[in-house]
Structure formats: structure tokens, C-alpha cells
Length: 432
Image (cartoon, rainbow, N blue to C red; front, side, top):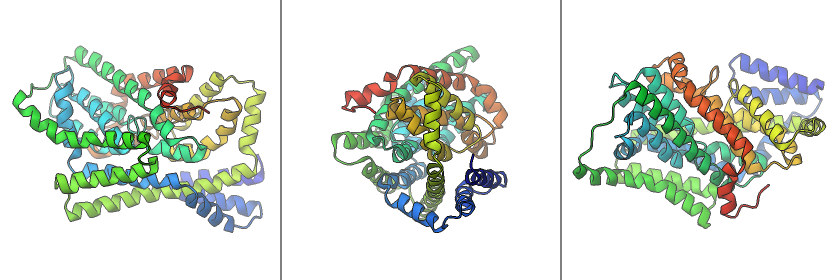
């Protein structure tokens, strides 16, 4: 490790230990590296400016954030909840099954795990806590687990960022997440079924047939968004970045014009919340550009590739190593940091071994979703605790079956790449 990289790591760790915002910690570490190497610190502005200006795909991030916040503020979550209650509410443990199906639908609109937990998840938890058969820990665990579907089923904010870092096709990444996402949802529903049968959890009351048309009508328009987005992308009507603008406009029309659920005060709150969320991501992106400059200048990615080559890893061996690495790091670091700092270091080794970048990207994102539901970082655990007051310990006690299921699915996706690649290849993706 060179003196410059040592200074960079020390400043970055110190900033995080002092609870400095991660974006500022990354920028400070990059500036410290340039000073230690005797380089012009004006390189920070150059790297950040060029990185942001040349990344057209990044425009999708604030637009998807805005779309998710609009839907959470505009009664869309409640409408989707009522619609899904018709479909799976009569199953044992009906409310938990409804939450998983709601997350599938909401995932096709927002691309964010946090938005899923804070919107539809909160609606479901409130309903479950009204019934004694659902413990607090179980209610929180189901919501936290199902929220991980957000960035797997397209659209996906982490996949957009990964595409910027790797150069992989955003459209192929979105398609690559479809089959794993539905497998995740199906397996979660199986887990809930066994727990519900064991604990004799209730079914939801039967909804009279005469009420179905009104409920379906209320939920049909929000359900149209995934169809519009994915249909537009894969028909060539608009790019994935333009799809984010379509999603934001679609959500605004639904919540503001059709449902009349947005006041000017609420709309201003949505704008401010979206601005804050986008600013946090942008600051992390800015910090990552200068850190990646430092790592590239020091030859870290190339050294990683040479080390992997010297170890004679097979593709599967390399991917298993990456899984372990991200599962550990995901317990301590933010998703954006993992995507923007560690993924670029691993990409040359992945390319050297012939690992498909779409397969690699979906695996990386799933690893990070598992990190979101595992302490000590576990952002979804902290968000759910802040919104509901459910202790993290109770959620973890009830959440281990979901965590185990996700780990088994991750292993299956690692060993059988076609779980990810079948749909993209069917739609014309050529690979690599």
C-alpha cells in the first residue's frame, strides 16, 4: 500500500468514525490523497465535474427518487394495498402475503428499497399490528425483507448506478432482475405460508364481489406504471433515463390530477425530500469520482485483476469470493459506497475471467440488499424502527428465515447464471 492510498484510507475511516456524511468523508479522503501525492487539488473539481457531466444515465436517479416520493404522498400505496388484498388476502397470514405482493407492484415503480419500506410497508405494518396474531417483530421482518425487492425488480436505482460504473446496458440489467425478483417474492410467500400455518395466523375477511370493481379501478392506474415504463424501454419508445422522467410525470399526474391527493404544501414537501435524497446520492457520487481516480492512478484495479489471475480462480470461485466480500462489507457500508468504490476495483478481474457484467451486476445488487436487512448497518432495519418503533432485535429474531432464503437464492444465482441472463438473452442481449 502506497503512502497516498494509506492517507486516503485513514482519512476516509476517520471521517466515518466521526459520523461525517459519507460523501464529505470521500471528498476529504480524495483531497488528502492529492495533497499527500503533491498533486493539484483542482483535480477534485475536474474529476467531479467531468464525472457528473458525462454520466447522462445518472439523471434517472433523482427522477426515480421524485416518482417514489410522489407515490408515497399521494395515496398510491393504499390503493395498491387494497387491490392486492383481493388477490392474496384470503391466504393464511393474508396481510403478510399482501405486503409481499404490494412490494412486487411498488418495485415496478420506485426502484428504491427505502421508499418501499417507508410507503407500502408502513401501511401494512399498521394493519398487522391491529391483530394479535401478528407479532411486532414478524410484521417488521416481513416488511424489511419484502422491501429488498425494490432494487431487484425493475426499475432500479442501484442498477442505474452500477450501469454508470461498469458500462453495462441498463435495459439488460433491468431485465436481468425480473426473474430473480419474482423468485424472491415467491420464496418469501412460501416462508410466510409455513410460519402462518404453524402459528395459525388469520386470513383476511372476504371482500364482497360487488366491491371488487371499485377496488380494481382504484388500483388499476398505479399498476399501469410498470407496464408503461418497461414497455416503453423495450419497445424503443424511450431510453431508461427518459423512462425515469416518464415515471415522475406519471406519478405526478396520478397523485395530483387523477386522485387529487396532493396539496401545494404536500407537493413542496415532496420536492424538498426528493432534493435532499438526490443531493445525498450526488455527494457520494462526487466523492466516488475522486476516489476512483486515486485507485486507478495507484493501479489498484489492475493489481486486483493480477491477484485474481495468480490465484487461478474459476468464474464461480471468483463470484463466491465477491459474494462473501460484499456480504461482510454490506453489514458496515452504504450501498452507494459499495457500488461506487468497490465495484470498479473488481470489474477488471471480472472481465478477465469472462464474467458477464449483467450477471455480475444483479448479484452485486442482491448482495447489497441482504446487507440492508442485516445489522450492524442494516439501513432498512433502522428506517423501519424509526417509522414504527419496532426494536431491531425483534425484527432480526423473526427475520432469519427470510435472510436464509435470500442467501440460498444468491447461491443459486451464482451457480446458475441463466437465472439472471435467460430473459435478457431472450430479448436480444448478447452478453459480456
